[in-house]
Image 1 (cartoon, helix red, strand yellow):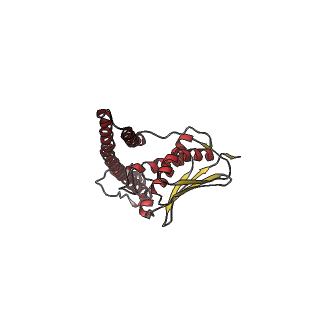
Image 2 (cartoon, rainbow, N blue to C red; image 1 turned 120 degrees about the vertical axis):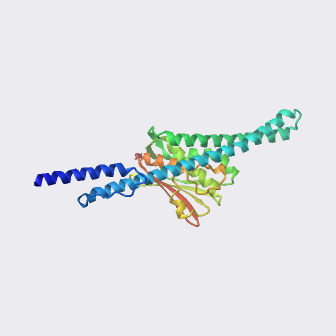
Length: 289
């Protein structure tokens, strides 16, 4: 009789768990209630249900952001393309155009073509980030040399915006890293600093310990509110929804940077106050010479 009662209770538990499993991914059902003896299991199942619903809401929001950005970029593609067609048409139609005007129109058309290229690259970024897993191809990387090379690449933009970068790093630092992908991280951080800095000087401060290196990219500028700072590394999130596309408007740059840094077993964080906005990257060191 006792055995019968035990088996009957066991079957009731199994039925309760079976019903709970059916409700786990049912958005219409409320949180799951199990017999008191299964309270611990109940908590774990409800935790899974909450996480599942949270992830679904996040996925829907990300998809909406992505769609909004595709529309935004597709619309903005028309502006440089229309300008390019207009100036090139003038160059084609007016055969005896003065050299000064011809040079001016060619320069404008080239500038618009670069803008068009940036926007197309952003559209490709949206597709790649959704469909591809980032895979590292590691090798020895001289961090100082990489940062100096990136700074050199930004020279035309720095000159155009009347800004300069100061790098503080006193010793050679070697990392076991993917040079192209890590360069993308710092390229993005420096680009943001250039476009958002209200001061001429942008600083990159590199300090090391026995096992890690800290890189801080800092600029003076408008304070980023904490609620936006908390979300700044979310994909497709733009802290400044109205910012000009020249600064990179997909909201993917920092999300990709975070993924790359974490794949290198590092961390990336952001702080902002009335004086400075700082992005701090912490990476493990392979060896120091």
